[in-house]
Amino acid sequence: MKTLRLVIQYLLAIVSWVIFALLWAWVFWEGPAVDELLTVGYILLVSFGIVVLMAIWVRYNVGIYRRKGARKTVPVATYDYSTDRLGKTVRLDIDVLRNERMISVTIENGEKCYVAMRADDPATVSDV
View 1 (cartoon, rainbow, N blue to C red):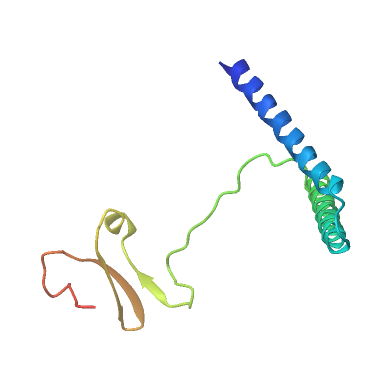
View 2: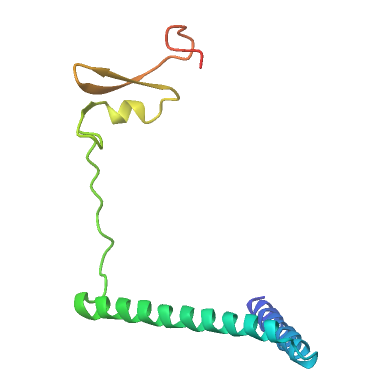
């Protein structure tokens, strides 16, 4: 099965490249006008620029690898929920709120409070 898939992929790649080459041959066979040649030149220039930028990016990453070495483990992310992005103190029980469907966020005494809401409580549902 894997061999059949590989053969199909190679055939698709070869057919695609042949079609690509034939289309370019057709473009030049028809004798492109000057403005079309300028357009092709712009495309080639942009393509060359992309290749140069990719080469610079790869070189930069190789430099990082040589300087730092191979990555041995995935860095451990730490999550601090004690404050929000604005530095406001946050009060919540994340284990309780993790499975809640509705959560109310209020500010009390300068603290941001996260509290589970009951869907059947009319005081918790507001018209938007």
